[in-house]
Image 1 (cartoon, helix red, strand yellow):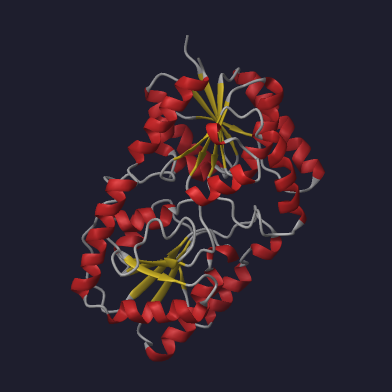
Image 2 (cartoon, rainbow, N blue to C red):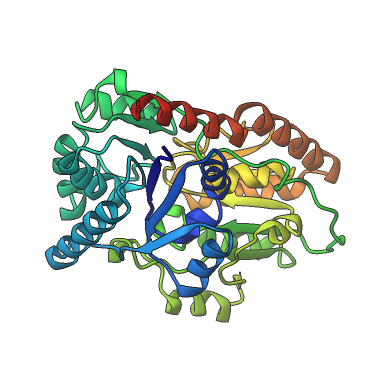
Length: 371
């Protein structure tokens, strides 16, 4: 009998991008797949065009009414489709999805895609998350972690037993899709930031470092590609007003959100992600796969991808001055040196982060928990 898999995502954008190949492969393997998520009608339509069943379960924040609505929507959808296995990604789906599937007795595979300041923040949201994780993961059949640091923290804090935990190389990278592209030579050196516009992604440091660099290198271009993001703590968000101010100041060239970042990566000289912490950064994987050197922070989820002086440069976390210094260092590299970094970067991600590794891990885990 055909088994039904429910995939619980924060936003359909993730299904259309980093987890598209996994979702389609599950369908190709004969599973009946439903994605329980939210997003714009346009993004939902993209998924449905690819043959993916999508159910809008909305989202939640720490507002109790929104949380109860979200839980109710998840439970209703899972019962309706009669799911045999559930896959969850990111914090909200991991917590509330496992809460529901634990009640319903549905085997669940959870991917801890990154923990951010889970263990350091004293905000009510993260305090609640730490409290809930201890209970909701008890019945989880299997957990994937994207880096060893996160896995060790969850085991040490007894959120999960080590026998249920395993490492996978992030979301992996489709190196045939993200391959080098020929571009028209640009006389201006271009740095590129790609990601959700959140403060803990290092956006403020990127802008501050740009100010420093531009004083000595006025011809350098600093681009940002990515959406503003409201599904987060207010103090962590970047507003439209912030962006407009940077553009008016002529510090940043804002390109908006993009469904296909390949052309932006191809047109850049160096991709910069000064994130405070990642699971495994998809942006760095994709840029590296396209043979672009990267600058990122010497932190979990980033240093696993970028080797300092080999495939890019590492800077201190939340340090705009050090980031600016690394940017200047990259500018001073010859084209041949940057090309060599790019070549090594692509070789590394193909060897260590091939998306097929992730797909195989999921197929094996699904077969194991659904017996």
